[in-house]
Amino acid sequence: MSGGLDSYTAAAIAKAQRFSLHALTIRYGQRHAREVQSARAIAHALGVERHLELEADLRPIGGSSLTSDVPVPRDRDPKGADIPSTYVPARNTIFLSLALGWAEVLGANDIVIGVNALDYSGYPDCRPEFIGAFEQLANLATRAGVEGARFRVHTPLITLSKAEIIRRGVELGLDYGLTCSCYDPEPDGRPCLRCDSCVLRARGFREAGVADPLLLR
Image (cartoon, rainbow, N blue to C red; front, top):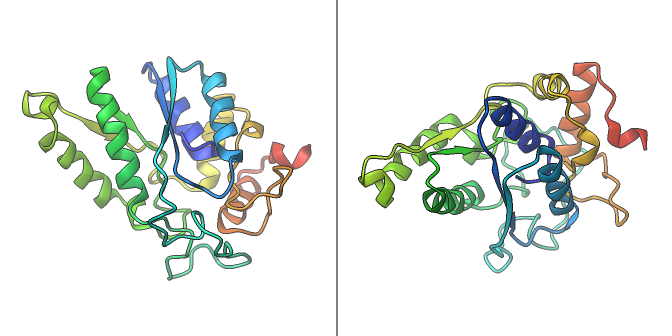
């Protein structure tokens, strides 16, 4: 649970499907704490069984503008051919591995992640091929898998546009004012409105015909 609208919507869909929710947020050295605050608010709103925050500082590894002082790209086409500097090396592999470890302890077979392969910045770890490969790994690399459990990684948003995601969330009654999508928000938490994530969010709300509650405050 990152604190963004995708993970909020994915979790809400799982709740609507009557799953009991345990939410995992990773403090990975991201350049701002606003998204962690949003994750806490979302977890509370969804009434999760437990919200676990783990430290996995990726700053020493580097390689991303989200974990360093390298400027976050702004005013670019987020659907361009190049993978931007906001890509964090192996981030979803690391996050899913931590989620898998916790799931095995909980006796849970289902992991939900809000990745999207349509309205995103081309990150390789948001693709269906990656999710399928990780699911196979989960069933090979765990005691639970060897003993017959079948782990499944759910990606309810992976083929949806940002507008479709927002419409689904509105149908579920979600308050997107709790979320934070910006890669580099202002000191007071306001979104920059110019990074890839802000651009995709704005386009999604516009195409969904819905006002972004973050901009109404």
